[in-house]
Image (cartoon, rainbow, N blue to C red; front, side, top):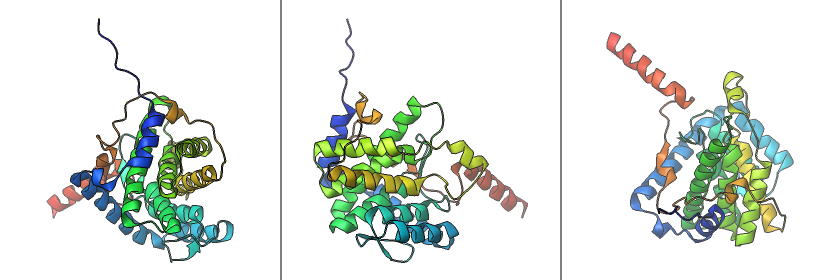
Length: 280
């Protein structure tokens, strides 16, 4: 009689991966893709500086989340870690030009990189430590996104799951222990926005895909857990599934956009450009 495979705790896998991933463990082809994602993030952030929402977000961060731990990529002003994560998350996502993941139907990079960058600046992390946190954040966010969309019938915006990846990346950089990591992800999931993404498509606004909120929520959650603030165990961490963290790399499925708009528009733009070229 066949027996089913033993269940594997997501919580234990995520905590172990968050604490123990080393850059030397990341295969060369995965490293190259991380480099591409970082280059893309830099490019879309520079391009996003002209958008009004970017200045509004940075000005708000100065007023409400000021500090000296990290910098706004808009103009280099000093902010708190959550403030910089918020402002830079808005900046990276403002043109809808940031990286995307088809299965999660969202944009992890505009949350993970701003959150990890702000935390890395605050703790004076090395480049290797920053890269390790970015990989941790991407992988945790992608798995959380896959699971939330399996569980929920409606299409939720990126911060509903990306917040957990940012919390993991921030927890890694601040050296949180296992219990604190669990609380960080629980706080992040509990406070994550339940934003119904089709509304943003039908009625566009500066709220976009909630990436700034996800970056801010994730960093704040880890910093709260570091101080002893507790949260409910997240639904994600309660799941029983072998995620194959460190063996199968979800970030390899991230795509880079050729045009600054939703990925569903990209094939139509290619088709129109091809048709135009054929008529000239």
